[in-house]
Length: 451
Image 1 (tube, rainbow, N blue to C red):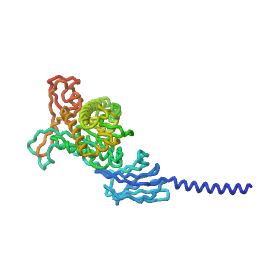
Image 2: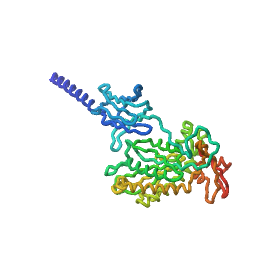
Image 3: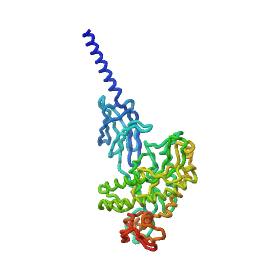
Image 4: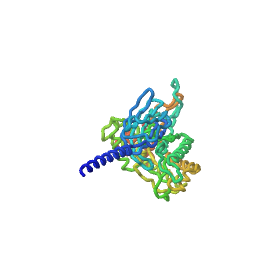
C-alpha cells in the first residue's frame, strides 16, 4: 500500500510538471499583428500582443535598424510586415525559445522611443515604437519672398497675416470614434480641416497651418507646440462627438476649463528654466517665481477670454446648419487647448454615433457648409481681435516687426487690447510705462513687437 502510494505520488508529480510546462508555453505572450503608421517627421510601429510584456530596445547602424527583445514571448504566426515611411521592413524571430526578437529595418538612423499600452476599446495590449527623424520646421508667418543675396535699400510696412492653426483630431493608429457605418472620426476631422484650411487661405491676409495633413498620429502637446512655432493667432481642433446613446446629436464647441488652466499654469512655471518658455512673447527663464506666475496668469486670462469670444461666434455659425447639442460654449480639460498664450477652441462638429449625423459628416456638401460657417465665426472674431503686428518687408524678405500704436476707445480694457494685438498686459505696461491697468479714452498706447 505504501509502495503504491509512492508510485502514485511520483506519477502525479510528473503529470503536474508536464501540465506546468504546457501551461507555461500556453501562457507565453504572442505577437498578434504589426502595424506601421508613417508621418511627415516620424513613423510609428505598433505591435499588437496577447498580454502585457517587458522589453528592451536598442539601435544599430550599418545598416540602420531598431531591435527590440521581448522575454517570455513568441511570434505566433507573424513573420514580419512590409515597411512604410522610413521603415523598409519589420522582421520577427525567436532569438531563444522564450525570447522574441523584433527588428525594424530603416532607411536612416533615427531617435527611437518605446512604451507599452494596456487594452483600450477595440485594442488589446500594444508595444509602440516611435521613430523620430527630426521635427520639420513649421512655416512661420511671412509677408515677403525668400531672402535675396543682397539687402534692399528700401522696405515697406505690411501687416503680419493672421495665422489659423487647424488641428484634425486623432490620426494614424488612433481612429477616434467610429460610426455604425464604419466612419472614422480621424477621416472626417481631416476632411473638414482641409476644407477649412482651403477657405482660410482664400481670404486676404489670412493663412492656415494644418497641424496634421495625413493619416498619422501627433502627440497632443506636440500639436500645441507646432501651433506656437507657426506663430498661430488662433488654434482650432476639429473632432466628431460620440455617445453610447445613438439618439445623442448636435454640435458643440469647447474651451479650456479653469481647472485645466490652473494645472497648465503650474506646469509652465515648473518647466520654464529648462525650456526658456515664451509666454506672449516674454521670456520666463530669467523671471522669479512671482513675476513668472503673474505673467502666465495674465497671458492665460487674455487667451481664455479670447477663446470664449471665438468659440461663441463659431458655435452660432454651426447652429445655422445643425442642431446644437449645447447652446452655450462648454469647458473641459482637453490637452490640445492648453497653450497658455494662444486662443484655442475644440469643435465637436456632430455626433458620429448618431446614424443621421454620421451620414451628414461624410457628405461633402455638409462638410463645406460646416467649414464656411466656422470660417464666418473666425472672421467675426478677428474683426474685433485683429492681431496688428506690423512687419517691415521688401525684396530682401521680412525684417523684425516694429511697434504699432493704438488709441484707446470707449469700453477698452488693457486685457482686451493685449488679446487683440496678441501681446501680454505685462508687455503693454513696460512699453508704455504704466504702473497699473488703468487706461483712459484717447490714450495712445505703444504696441510692442510680439517676436
